Length: 260
Ligand code: B12
Image 1 (spheres, rainbow, N blue to C red):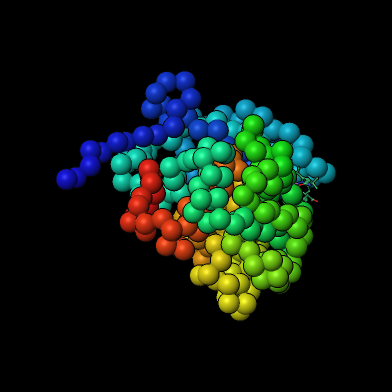
Image 2 (image 1 turned 90 degrees about the horizontal axis):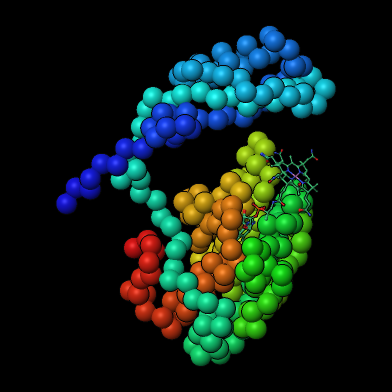
């Protein structure tokens, strides 16, 4: 049966008014001319009612703008179809019990922020004892053995350590996205994983502010996680995927929102 159309567009003041807020930087000093250039740029994007709300010097000869404008197009929300990693989430105690009963050994995970990227806060949020947003990190789970290699870890080293530790899952964090370096680093990691023979055998997870599940799958990972990810989501995903892989949970068993 065809789904009912659900047209949506952004709103600022009133529902469906189409108002959006844009933020961008021009490589010119702050001036009235720069503000007019910003307004013209946004008009060329097909937006109307353009208002440059803020223009701030960002560095010598750079200006950062915040611009409000109005869009006239809609998106049909009912036609959006992307895979999601939403499993039936077990609580901390339930998940540990499940691993103890069904696997009877610790789940080994190893993670790092790779390549030239030095942003460790994201991978720390997932792995460190303290966790994130009131949610314990994987180090805190008695039935996980978590290794956090830190920042700027070369792909070769991460893959080598994964082999050494016989890891069940490898966690790759990519935060910097300038010139698509996160895509290059991620592809290079997948190549290395293939070379070492762990691709398709060990669970490979990618995360970062510009990552989503769809992108991660396209790059050759098993799952992807974006902004606001909680460690418990990652713990659940790893545990269920591992149990399925080992035939200890039916492959046909699907969880709420899981793609199938
Ligand atoms: C803190 C910070 C730094 C610190 C990092 C300290 C550290 N130990 O990490 C320092 C000062 C070192 C730094 C340096 C730089 N930074 Co910086 N930094 C930030 C800042 C302010 C916060 C990032 C952060 O900690 N977020 C909080 C965490 C919790 O969020 P997260 O990373 O998204 O992680 C969550 C999810 O994405 C997910 N996740 C992330 N990884 C993974 C992995 C897996 C496997 C999973 C499952 C989930 C997951 O789970 C996490 C929890 O929900 C951001 C701006 C911002 N407000 O975001 C800029 C920012 C990331 N930095 C930026 C830049 C440009 C740099 C520098 C290049 C600056 C420079 N010119 O030197 C350098 C980079 C050096 C390098 N080689 O990488 C830019 C990146 C722009 C871009 N498009 O790429 C940003 C966006 C600032 C900006 N607007 O310009 N930075």
